Length: 548
Image (cartoon, rainbow, N blue to C red; front, side, top):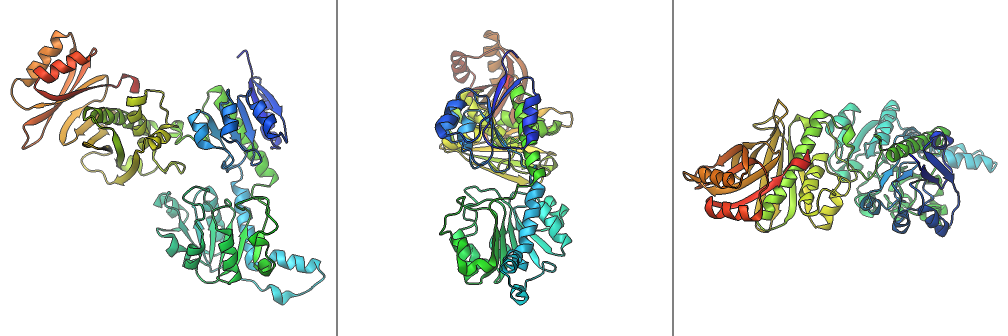
């Protein structure tokens, strides 16, 4: 390329990440630390990428200032300092490094668990004060105790492994992971958080901070805890109600609490965790979970490499605001992803025919193909549901709709979305889409054959079998002799060739449903003639040629 990508680094990151940019012949690197807000906004106007840590807030004003921005990198796990919806609407990829500090955070969690039950910091402080008060620091053992892991992702899973090595019984609460994940870790998966905390001697948190997890451990939840339990939070500030936790420790409903993260950092002088009367039962550290030499080097390397791949248009990982990574899907999964998009296109067109937009979309996935996948945590949706949304919205907005913004656009339009999963029935794997509109539902069922051919096998109440490809003419007609001949004659006169034909009927009805793949275009006049002279109730055309 004639011009180099301009990359701005605003905070101190591991040299391994900077070296990646320095070695890239197509990158112009600028490291500018401790910028003022005004200075940062000015610099953002000319850069293609920015790499930050937690000290740089990328809010709407800064993202909008980055007219050339293509990627925002975070040398760490959390991205709560980045406005993800704004970045997504701008088409800016947000990269983090979720695996780089996994072991560092895991080991700090174990350290805090041990520190709080054995009162290690307090004993150390006492000795520095010239005291030798062994009896004051009688603690408890982890062995034989029940640990509840809230959030069984990468870090939660590693904590579970180590806790079992300490002789602990491990249970977990995570509504977004499959049973087989818990089974692989020999962990019992709990379905109810209140019930789970009532059983645990030790509770450790490993979830992101979201609307759902904000103040998840509040005064009401703390009342469900087993009396005398311990709580550890090395995940994110804001997940626990800090005043309520301090009060629970004060009342000895919690025997101890350890945390590395806080809702506001640094702490104010009057923070509840700094109260003198509970200092002997609280362990606090200044957000050092990722502060190991190894972790800092690795998160910088991971973030920088993937940012470079984004700029070059090459495969990359760890895009926080992409609902899924298409490159990670296998061949069969990609075929079903494409099928799901086509189902969205067809369903939206059928809703248009009814003259009513969808206000709810329900996707049902059946079959072993879908068993091995986890939901995207950020969207809580599978790739196939997001592909359905993309197809739906393309009908009204156009092909500019991306997988990244499809869920956001659906939310803007107040379309509620849900998924369900079930055992296969007639076919090995199926995707079913049902749209609810003010004028009734639209439903589709589709599969892919063993030969790899996409098939739509039901439209509303009609069993039918056709390939969603090319240009499709779909219609409902009176089920009586001569109708198909009329349709063929009308299309023939307009020089529109029929490539394939499928017909669906249902018992007890005088109506049928037809699907024709055609060569050529149909305009409004031809549509009107088909309805008027072809004995049709309605007709719709769907162009699948741009849907792959």
